[in-house]
Amino acid sequence: RKAIDWLLHDHSTSELEFECANPFLMERYALAVAYLSAKYPSLENVTSSSVLGLVHEDMALHPDAQCRWSFVTCHGGHVTDIYLIKKSLSGTIATEIALLPRLRVLDLVWNKISSTIPTELGTLLELEFLWITLNQLS
Image 1 (spheres, rainbow, N blue to C red):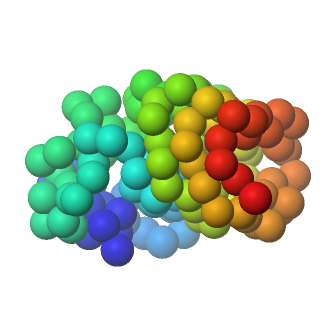
Image 2 (cartoon, rainbow, N blue to C red):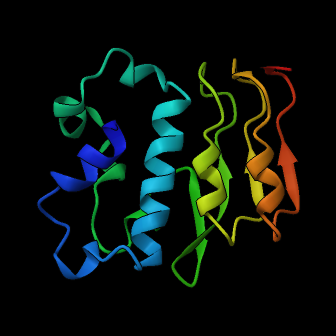
């Protein structure tokens, strides 16, 4: 819910960008959910209404926002790589990660991520590297 509230209340997102068929909007949503689910330390105990004030500046939402986030690599505007190595993440891997159809690399090494590995990762047909060691996954 925090991720969708964040997208809905962002003033830099135009109505045109807000079409549900827009793949970049879906990718921004997936990244926001993944970021919040992983419990990044600076976002602990955040309410939906205050998410905009607490996210890092590089997570600002503008047309190519998903490609400006410091832990993301893109090609052709689509998210291809996510690198969150040793970031003190302590939540879970969000199932919404499957909304990133061009994802090739997911590197979450050396965090405190718990629970199970989502089966939805199996739908990522372009995923080549999945690094999740040194976590607390079952």
